[in-house]
Length: 51
Image (cartoon, rainbow, N blue to C red):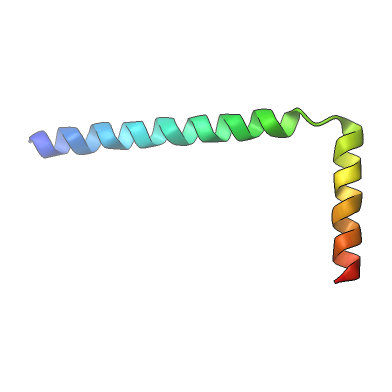
């Protein structure tokens, strides 16, 4: 029965760690200004047109 408890705790830790990573990425994404987003999209479009 101990292994099930260890496995359960490890699963919960994994879920919590994933949540932290997602939250950080969301904060970083939302930190862009509209002008920065527009510039990045135009840059990506230019790169795809060149390829």
